[in-house]
Every structure is written in structure tokens, then in C-alpha cells.
Amino acid sequence: MSDNPSFVLRGIEDVVYEQRAIPQPGPDDVIVEVKKTGICGSDVHYLVEGRIGDFIVEKPMVLGHESAGIVSKVGANVKHVKVGDRVAMEPGATCKKCELCKSGRYELCADIVFAATPPYDGTLARYYPLPADLAYPLPENLTLEDGAMMEPLSVGVHSVANLGGFRTGQSIAIFGCGPVGLLCMAVAKALGAKRVIAVDIVSQRLEFAKTYAATETYLPPKPLEGESKIDYSRRNAEQMKQQLNIQDRGHNTIDLVIDASGAEVSIQTALYIVKTGGTFVQVGMGAPNVTINLALLTVKELNYKGSFRYGPGDYPLAISLAASGKVDLKPLVTHRYAFNDAIVAFKATRAGKSEDGKGVIKAIISGPE
Image (cartoon, rainbow, N blue to C red; front, side, top):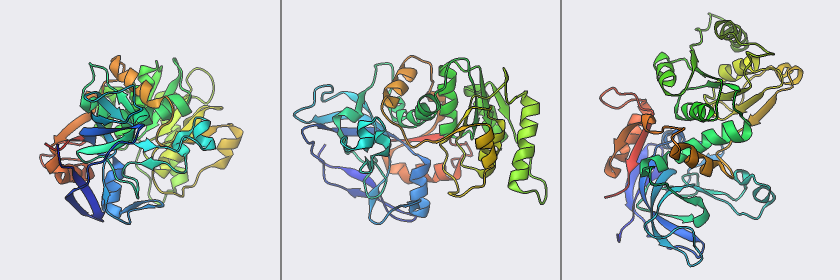
């Protein structure tokens, strides 16, 4: 192919198709012809608000970062993949030299070049350049669509298995039944969870979670008039404990809580229900400032961790879980769009449903024809 059509964000609510230069590989790089790209909430956030925290879109930027494709060119030093290989694309190139990279926490590299994070272009184009070590060959039983789902699945792996240290026979509660929350449930189930409790304020989401990976679900009550968030969260936690027989110590405890919602009351409630000495991992992005009961962190000696993207070993484990059949990604892909319909795909993802009323979990955009 001699052209490189790209889906470009120029400003808030302003997206266009543009021709971009075809990239050439460095000696340690590959060029991937992108075939499948999932839409992430962060992509929508940039479209609607032009920023996420301190990451501000100040010049035109190609969107997309959940991708898989076919290797079209390889650099002179590349040995583990060849032209024609189908690969999952890890979209964050790091310096590999700083203290954090060398200590195995490369996701925190200050110089990371992450797709569709300003000022760097994303993957919604025909071609995307990538360090070869971030191109992971897909087993034959996985599709390119599965390959695109490795990015959000790796977020779940990082939160649950890596930072959460989750083990067989343990119990987990996950707040938020969006794509990341559902994939955290799938990872926990694949690792042999005793209980996987899904929490959400939308009953239809809980119904899907129960059919997908959750063993139990919990629908929080509505707040009372005039009730503060922290008082509501305390009441909500007590109801959740009683309804699901959750204890602070002993056999019926929650070893790990993942917040994939970003909601303040979810974070507050989670600290009440996680076991004494347990772990809380924050993966959902919400308001930057929330109120928490700091005494709970102290007297329960909780491990409170933030989770940012994914790090060493997360992509390989994600691919292994999917290839072995322990994680089924197909039920999560609810909508598929041609490249020329990317605007429609973003509109549906933003609305949470397509024009026919079907709810969106994950929308996948095919590469240019």
C-alpha cells in the first residue's frame, strides 16, 4: 500500500481523515499494518474534552492505541518477527535506560512514547511504527480482533495479577462493570478465584458480568436525601457485607478490591469491605480529588496501590490466558465498524449504545481497506 490514511483529532469534537507519511523502521523497529483497533474511554475523553489531566491535545493527533495488525516491514536487527506475522501491539515505547525501566517498572518511564497520548500519534492509521520487542506474535487460535483486545486485557492483568498479587483460592470485588472491570473479573476467574464480586449501579451491566466472569453481583442502594458521600459509603458497605456475607477477618473476606469506576463512593466503600491486611488497587480514572477514611488505611494496614497501564510480562500473560481459553474476549466485542465509519464508532462508544439501542461494551474499528 502506498498511502497512510489516518483518523486525526484536531481539537475538541473535531476529527478528520488525513493522509500521513508512511513510516520507515529503524534497525530495531517494525512497521505494522494495523488491522483492528478498539476504542478506549481515553480516546473518547480526548475527543470530548481535549485533555486527560495534564495530557493536553495541543496539535493534531492520530487517535487509537488498542491495536493488532500484520508486520509489513522489519528493521535490520529484528529477529523474532518477520513480514506477514500477525502481532498484538503494545503501544508504549520506553527509554529502556532509566532507573524505572531497568527496575522492571517501565510503564512509569518519564520518556514513554505512548500512542494517542499527547503529543504522540496513535494507531488509527494504516501503518504504525513500533519497537520490535513490543510486537507480540499471536498464536494461531487467536484472531486479530483478539489481538486488539490484549491492550485492555493487559490492564486487567497488571491490576489483578501484577499489582494485586492475586492468587488461586482468593476472593476479589470489582467496582465498575465496564470493559476494564470485566477483564479484571476474567483475569481473577482465570487465576482460580474463589469469589468474584461485581459491583455496579446499572443492573444490566451486572447481569452481563454474572454471565461473563462474576460469581456474585451487588447493586448499591440509592443515596438518601442530604446524606454525605462518606456516610452513604459506610451504609453501602454495611449492606454489602450483610447481603454477601463479607467479613473483615476469617474465611469470608475480600483479599483484593479493584476500583475500575473512578467513582468516589466506590473508592470509599471499597476500603470498608476489603479485609484487614488486604489490597486495594485503583485502576479507574475519576475525579482527581476524593475524600477517604485514612484511619482505615492505618488500622487495617491496607496496601493501597495505583495501577497505570501495564508493565513487563503483562502482555505475554494476557496472550497466554486468551490462547489457553481461560479468558474469552469475544463476548466483550459488541460492535464492529469499518475505518471510514470511525466517527460513528466513537459516537456509539461515547453514548454507550449504538443507534439501534444496543449497549456498547467494546467497539472495534477495522483498518483502512
